[in-house]
Amino acid sequence: MYELKSVIEKLKDIISQEKSGARVFDKDVASALAIPQTTFATMKKRNSIPFKEILQFCATKKLSINWLFFDQTVDMLINQTEKFFQIRYFANIRASAGGGADVFNDNYEIISIDKTLIKNMIPFENAQIEAINVDGDSMEPTLQDGSIVFIDRNQTNINKDGIYIATTTAGLFIKRIRLRANGMVELISDNRAYSSETMLPEEIQIVGRVIGNIESL
Image 1 (tube, one colour):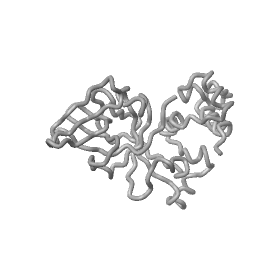
Image 2: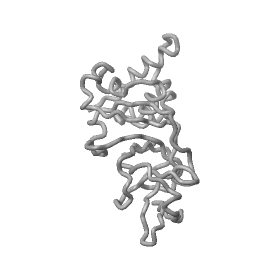
Image 3: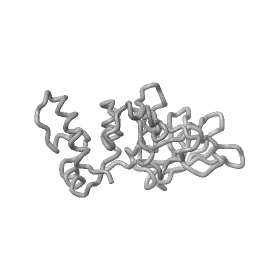
């Protein structure tokens, strides 16, 4: 079981270095993770680990999440690569669950994640995993605004049920996508307040299938 207290102490060491060795408190860690202090105190008491916020912190600071949770250095990862996923995390990319959003670019961080952290959401065989953020509420309650979603870029066959990331003329979308009998492609929102949209096949390119997510607080 992962202990939030030990992770907090390591985060304090990182933050302290940025403050020239100044003493760092739990409130400073909460601020660095963009979590309200009262919420963070409750999470610490319950050992409820904010994986999404820690993942974003590691990407920004260029830290290994494996070091935080398992004391594993980069050299150790090189010798045991079969135990880890190398995931490209596009921290600045948000796939829109409402209107169009940014398209993929070259601005990403490589994150090494132990398979035991996400073993229940990711198929290990033949998967090319990337992670981006969700923007908007049209996929609620399935996906919340601000969530991190994991995408398998090898799964682009929309004949399979599921949620997909798609590039369109209006931007990057995250929707349930269905190929209709007339050849049109339908983009479906889980939030019933949003209507479905249809597009010509040439107007849309499937980026990959969503295979897991980490919700925001």
